Image (cartoon, rainbow, N blue to C red; front, top):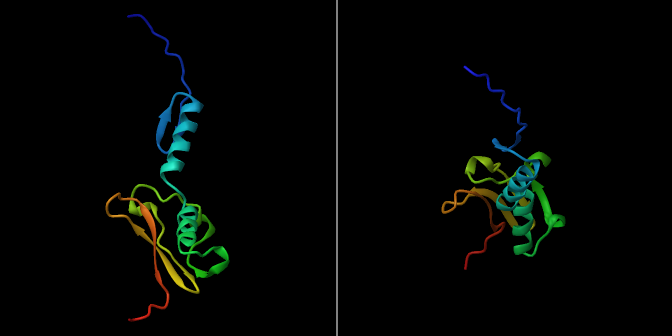
Length: 113
């Protein structure tokens, strides 16, 4: 029986997946960040959509770590939160169609017509 010496290979790991090169791992990370925005990014987009910004926020239930969490592909990746402005209440939700985290909003003081 011949002894075969295997060459040691250093693998780069990102998000539980092994990659042969650092460049492949960095590309996977970049793609992950594009496909999975942070809670901060989702919230800021929703604030802008409602013509509001960070200065309008009155209170929130998020920590800084939760703000920078990637929303992910599954609802358990999205932290549960509520953010209040003078006019709107924002909250986390899992999108039913896509199975990823989303930020929804409702008026803070709804008016019946």
